[in-house]
Length: 97
Image (tube, rainbow, N blue to C red; front, top):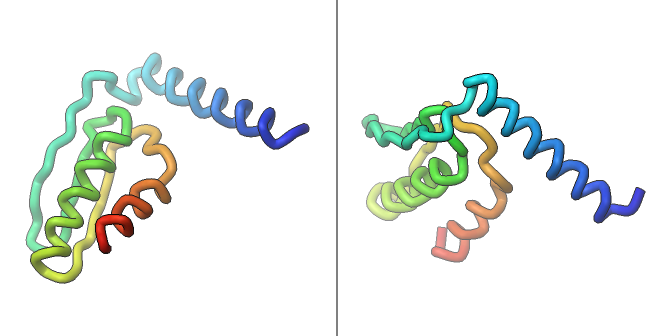
């Protein structure tokens, strides 16, 4: 199977899995992100929604904390598919982290 076909099959499987999670109530399409701050780490809850907006929020807050303190720790939970994690790390690297 050519690589391009395999990637399309994988994307379709991820879509079907996410769709199934919405249908069975595991994921909430109206889920909003919340941002409770702790003393040493940042915890982001995606409220069982799509994970990409939660990842954007987590990385933005993490970079802000790292700018101030020199380090940050992130926890992202209660999210569905977050996309390619390396894309967020690439963005942080482009911002100097």
